[in-house]
Length: 158
Length: 459
Image (cartoon, rainbow over all chains, first blue to last red; front, top):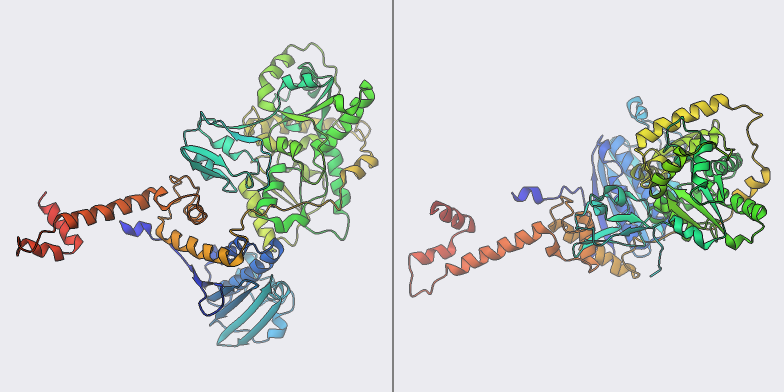
């Protein structure tokens, strides 16, 4: 009977202990689970809005989270996103063990996409993901090794 | 805390505390406490969803009535396009307008004329190269308020064009001053409204300092009298001026209909409006020029204060529009004046967001609250049944942390606590002093599940 009670949760909030104060939100993102796309970013947006972060900044954070989330779902065979919400900034770190990006510089250009046709047919893969993240974040770092995976770190100040 | 005016109210004596309204509120503004629904004023957007869903008709919209006309020497009624949809297509607009006038007005005017001006202003605005796209329609007051409460990051996308009723009211007031020779203060301008949010828009306008309207009168409250007065009419004296373009605003897609080949999305129904705003906030609507947002499904004809079923109304207005379009020619259409268009376009107005989500002024305290909410939520069943009076388990968790609710408000949590307590009492009741037992004392160490099983076997 108690099983009915348990919530299905793909994320969790933890208070950061070693920093002064902060919240850690961890999400695991699953490959091709399009129905879950947007869940992580709306959770992140809700949290920063509840903290009183202004609407425009909250929007930038949620765009970063959303694009990262989509990338992991579409290209990277899933991955993990860690969001550290601190009193003056939010840091997002996304790691995957996907195919990696052979030419990161090219991938940063608007409209560049390696998405297969079946993804484009769904309305994704327009080659705006990485440029959008870079434009929305105050700091943006990307490292990718073909065959091993991609790591992205973004930071947005309030 | 800032005080907001709201048209949507609760009739206390009719409310049985059933939580229907709380569960349907798009901004989670309603809580049921002490057996009665309470509206959180800062969150309410006057969309009227609660009026629609309350099975006991305990939710109502406060509007003015025909008695209020007595306070003014000269009264003007503004007829919305959605009013025409309340009548059979064979009843001409002339008759509807004349019938309305006989209810005690000195003059009637068509909001559809204001809609034509709004369309022209919108066309002009959309033609500008350097505006923030997509432009979000600001004609529906409930949608605008939803944006301010839930998506304040989108304020800069809002269309700067006045709502048609505001434009129509301004012109009608000027005309009434000319026709009556009276000062503007002794003229009452009344909108026959299909929705409660228009009443709020009169008393608490957004983007303008003061509304040109005096008040609003609920469509459904005068419908009976209006039907009677129309059927008793022998001749119609008031000539309508508006074209199909203006009258088309009654239904979803009507506003967008006059915008030519601009790329347009139409969202109607408050949840769809919310969804489309969410998509825009995520930066997903890049190839769109204009979004028509209507809080009510079907458009204004689906308003909570209309008299006729939305689909019946849609059918009748569509047929009326078809006939109007077939009869319209370039010559018999009343042109829209450029000066009116200029006044309707209010670029540079400032609109304030309504921050309602913030948990605490101190960000560190807010973080602790988020963690507490998360912990509390883990203990709740996640059924979103609403029995606690909060619309969802997450909302209850927030209310508990904010101190406005308690964990025992959840019937499932309460049952669990009672069961644990009962279990503890059974355990205690079976304890005996060691001097009395050797055999029975073994029970003390039994697992609770075995205890239960034993009891069941005993019957």
